[in-house]
Image 1 (spheres, helix red, strand yellow):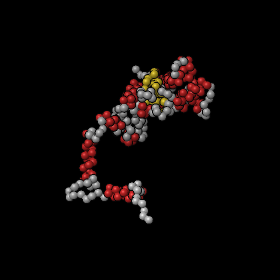
Image 2 (tube, helix red, strand yellow; image 1 turned 45 degrees about the horizontal axis):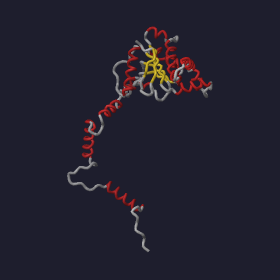
Image 3 (tube, one colour; image 1 turned 45 degrees about the vertical axis):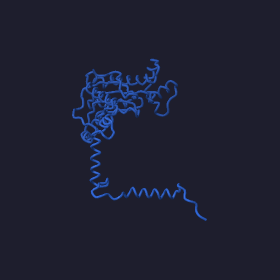
Image 4 (cartoon, helix red, strand yellow; image 1 turned 60 degrees about the vertical axis):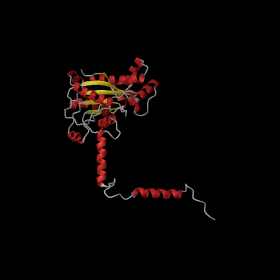
Length: 283
């Protein structure tokens, strides 16, 4: 009895065929005298040099916009100018960084080992930022800053208490930091949760209720204003109330009165990346 002819889809044929093709790939035919292959050192160097030249001249398919984007995010820049020591200069530098963030023209300043080594024994940040814990609002990125530029405090909804307030005070009172920014943001989950808990009189579990209570004054103001979007109104009220309280507290008020400290309330748009100043911008 004879065996039926093998099918064109016989698994063994597939294996053999694949093996033969792999062997052919691994063992290219012998070259003629003087011919250069990719495996040769000279050929590899020539190919890499040509590829580098093409990349530099923009002939490898990258648009000019893509090249600019690569340049914006490639190497961190190191600053040579000193940190601003006056509130207006500190405010202007911070807002310049936010404009770069919005325009996708980031400099990533002072994020290299040289800067790290320079700061190893001392620091003098020019700004202190109190913001929410939200993962979408990292102050160092939002303001395009580097190592040693900012003291950063983060809490749910930018809620404050003695420890947070003391942390905010640390920079101005010990390092001469000339600027404090209280930064709220669009669609804040902590504020929305606190708003619902207070409106429905249903306490949140665990220590989340402490955040709710810290945000109660902002909630009450939002209720009085009776806006179409009370949670957004509450978030804006929270940063303004907090900035006002810091500006007038026993330890920071004298620095504000002397003109060596400014306390600014601001609001970050998740949609655009832009920071809107609500009050307190230094003149």
